[in-house]
Amino acid sequence: MTTRDASGRSVDEAQDALHEAMRRSDTDALRNVLFEGLAFELPDGSVTDREADLNAHSTGAVRFEQILELHRSTREHAGRARVDSLVDARLIDDGHRIEGKMSYLRYWSIIDGRWQVVAGSVQPVP
Image 1 (tube, rainbow, N blue to C red):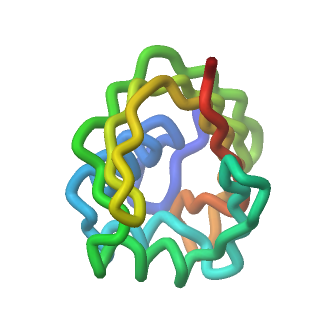
Image 2 (cartoon, rainbow, N blue to C red; image 1 turned 30 degrees about the vertical axis):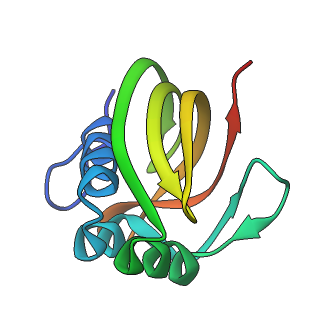
C-alpha cells in the first residue's frame, strides 16, 4: 500500500518533484523536499547538508542539464521510504562538466506532513 503525505503525494511523486527541482535549480521546491537536517554523501566521501545544497543551486555552482532516470526501486512503509535510482546525468559542478550514470540512494520520511529526503548518497557508476 502506498503511503501519501498530507498533500496526497506518494514518495515516487516526491522523487519526481525533486528531480524536476534539481533540473530547474528551484531552491523553493528543493527546500520543500529536503529535510532541514539532511546528511547527503557525495562521491568524494564528503557529506553535505541542505543549506550547502541550496546554496550550490542558487549560486549556479551546481547546474543540472539532464537527469534522466533509467531505473527506480522504491521500498516504502509507514511514512518512511528508501529509493534507489539510476540516472543518466549531465551537470556542471563548480565549473566542471560531469556526464554519466549516477546511482542515487535516498531515504525519505514524512515530516511536517510532507515527504522529505532525510539522508542519502550519490556515486558514479563505472
